[in-house]
Every structure is written in structure tokens, then in C-alpha cells.
Image 1 (cartoon, rainbow over the protein chains, first blue to last red):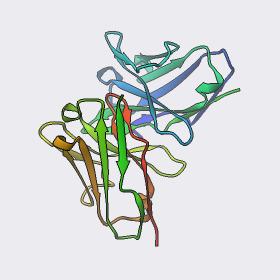
Image 2: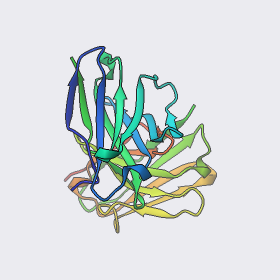
Image 3: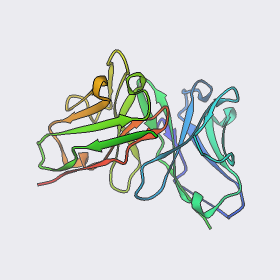
Length: 115
Length: 114
């Protein structure tokens, strides 16, 4: 079982909200980790969005709109990236990552389609 | 402005070697953990290796252990990745990155093919 699991794809309409999940493997407690989120568009490197551990330990990337926010669902052992007021430019691949056992571990990515 | 500029990629035969470099500016490189992250064509992100800012402690993915060596020259704000015994499945874009602070280069393409 992968350390981080992300749904491979998600579709949502312009103006709606999209909730992207990053589920940690059983036995790895989401509460102890900072979850980092990246956006990647074709032909470009990943762009940092934000990191979230708790409401008192979080960071928004420079220039990243506030409609991108992070949270956790402890019951699901998952990190969440919420994108509100979806725009066509939000169509991209989204990756979560954590620092785990001396390595950066990336989720497989979610392809977000805005249509 | 933060900049990370990779170089050294290219076409190499299986079993060959390449040395990637990454020159950093716009942030305190000497105090930053740095990493190499790769992306196979059409695939997701895969962390390859990382190095601590001060003590030079190094970390490797299983796919890189024994073949790749990460190093840094803080006096020149430069990160390196020496890649030996290259295989076809090492073909990827290699990014230099400070994953924690969100700084990434544009990447350099490594193609391993005969």
C-alpha cells in the first residue's frame, strides 16, 4: 500500500469547490505530519501552493490565492486541499507530499479538470 | 527572486554517467535542505535524493542508492547529483528543489538510451 494515496482524477464546474484528498497509509498518523501541496501544469515544474499541519502551523505560498486552503480529516487520516471558486486556470495536476522516514514521499497526483 | 537553474542533463548510453548541477540564488542556500526530484515522462513526482544544509547528511531513494551521489558546495550555492550506472528507467526530468520552502528549478532532461 502506498504511503500517500490520491484519487487519480477529479472533475468540477467553474465557480464550484473541489476537495482534493491525500490519504495516509494506515499506521501513519496524519496528525503528526505537515502536508505540502503542489500544482503542476503541463510543461512546467511544480508550483508550491501551501503546507498544513494545523491551524497554528500552516503556510500559504507567496502569491497563492486564499481560495486555496489546507485542512485535515483525522477520521479519514487524510490531508485535504480545498479549492473554492474554481477557475479554468486551476485545471492541473495536484500533488501532496510529506517528509517521512528520511524521505520526501509524493502522492501519485490528482488530475483536476474544470469543465 | 528565487532561482534554481539545473544543468548537465542530456543523452547517455545505458551504464554511463552524468553529473547534474543546480545553481541557486535568491535565498539562503547554505541553510536550506536541498533535493533532487524526478519525473518520468507522463508520470508523477519521485523524490530521488536529499542533503542537509549544514552537516551534509544525505538521503536516497532505494532507486538511487549505490548509484547516485548527492553533494553540495555552499560556497558556490550549488547542488550536484552524480549519477552512475544509468539505466533506461532513469530517463526523466530531474528537478532541483527545496521542497519545504517550495523552490523548484525548471528541470533538466536525462535520457538513457543506446
